[in-house]
Length: 373
Ligand SMILES: Nc1ccc2nc(N)nc(O)c2c1
Image (cartoon, rainbow, N blue to C red):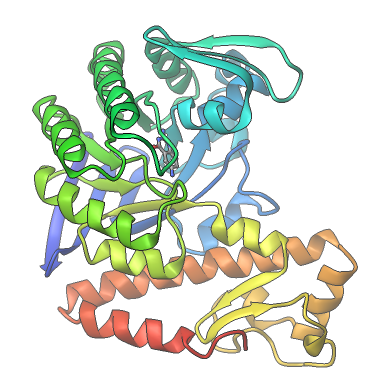
């Protein structure tokens, strides 16, 4: 087998990068958008639909799957790929972020996090070592270190404490992960909106020589400009030959601006969550299908799309389904939105490859300026 985990940089256009991550389960073309498959499902879609949109990799969540159906059970059933019928790469988040945002009665200390399940109140402990063990039981291809993400704005001392703890947990995860050919463990840069803390976090993680690096602690309530400023501080400090993953981002505009600052991988619930609430992303801007003005509109969302949800259904029908709270409405709009995001990424990859990323990004942004159409 050739190198079991290989990131090839294929082109650059300013700080934007075109690349590919080759793993045993497949190749991930970057810049990449990872549909979020939190509970072993990209909500409302079959994995064939997800694959058909062009997705190379999906995201799973340690926190949700350890609570239900349980990591050992998923392992007994052949791992997450077999369980969810997705034979391509999967990246799993480590759980800390979800514990802090979803669990109750949670406590965090040097050992790890202890919490009660938001599902049935059962008590759990999760150390860095247990998070890596769970991700291994899930048979995850790209595993994230356990970290502590601080909501912004936050005091410098609080951001520093969480960043230093995350560095100590990164080392414990690195040791627990060991050497697993064909799999990778990514570190997560923390440091809030503090350049000095971002720099320290990036440099200490770089010295660990990990397979890839996530930028965490962003998309947690800060203005977009603060997020972009932290990317300008962090990305140049990370090794150019390793993939960079901005966690939890974002809108199409966030993605364009973050690719321009050197990010290779993204994940966000935006396309699926917005779809379930009736919001469609299209090449000409966003369409809120809850709005009554669509009730008699026989046009599809995008007659030129290769996604049946965008091409074959009238806005009137989609409006009806959403207003009637029919599950087909959530499915069709989620499908449309994931396809939109994958087409956005393909356009970005093509533009970087042809050295036209800046003008491409301007054209895409201008197309949205038409607002709710
Ligand atoms: N905005 C986000 C989303 C997910 C995250 N996951 C981890 N593990 N850490 C973070 O800082 C995140 C931030």
